[in-house]
Image (cartoon, rainbow, N blue to C red; front, top):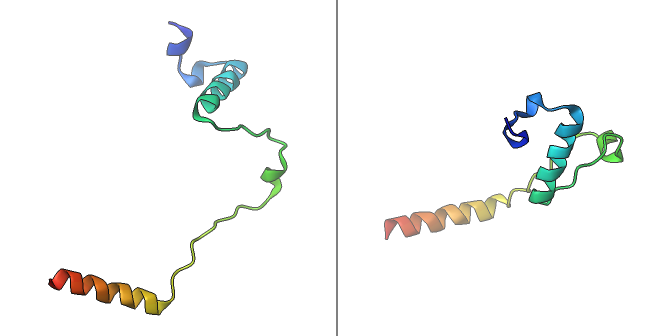
Length: 69
């Protein structure tokens, strides 16, 4: 079995890390070390704020007009 045909679970830790580096380079991703400060921050979710209710109602009215035509 060639090295490329091996399952990730069968690789040594060094081979596994090298495979991750190769994949991340191809995808343009950066792997951060485990001691990177970003891992000390609490998880954060950023949500897009909703538009004011008036604009939502206006959008519904416009859709209803288009559907009736």
